[in-house]
Image (cartoon, each protein chain N blue to C red):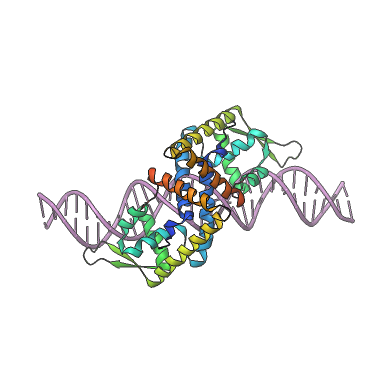
Length: 145
Length: 145
DNA sequence: CCGTATGATTAGGGTACCGAATGATATGGC
DNA sequence: GCCATATCATTCGGTACCCTAATCATACGG
């Protein structure tokens, strides 16, 4: 019973999360997107949002949202529209291209999943998802969830 | 069948990995350690290593190893000793304090595990570990594994 | 109509990684 | 023995991602 750090699930999960994020990033790169943009795109599919609301929902600071939106505007995925009701607020809305990019991103994510889970049995996949979502929800780890 | 990015395991795994890393970092902070140091400490428990070997084993570039070792020397966990057989090489060896820190880090990791897995049944924990290690090994994702 | 709160932005900092360039030492061909 | 080349550690500059604090415009309540 050596009890090493690398034996811990914490370590395994950290490394695996990082590796997965990289793979996902590689798949998104051709689209001009990065992982952190996906939550934004997906949120905006439902309805336009102000930037502060966006920040709070995905769990980052408003300044990060500014950067992300600059990038997303750069690829033509979103538009900032001054809210006529409250002229401080920028309403962020998805463009048609943004909707398309969001769908492509979802496909990319599905491909990464298929790639990652390739070696697992259906039972294992189910158990994995169940355990991960259980952890995420009991610890309130998912921003916007 | 909405097929959203946030439904993917890739997304879940990325977020969870990040959150887990943060928790682990918080536990390590009082020790003066950071997550990335742990693999180094653990590796050196077996035997002293040159920095390049260290870099390749944990999967980072040599320049990163320089930084990590500066930090680890700063807390007295390791020593750099010029190799007499090849004077280009610095042999990195654990100090007694380094050994102690490594044990403390393992305890911290175990605590994070207990915390994360608190809400899961023993069966779920086993299935989770099994699935994660399966993914890690089939994709060669674990540096030093 | 003035003080205060709110929304977006900018500026600067911290962590963690990378690649390329540098300097010291080793090694193999001749 | 000597020189080109390779290897090891290091430094430097850059990228990605996040943060806080300060700034500026606009809204809102007394």
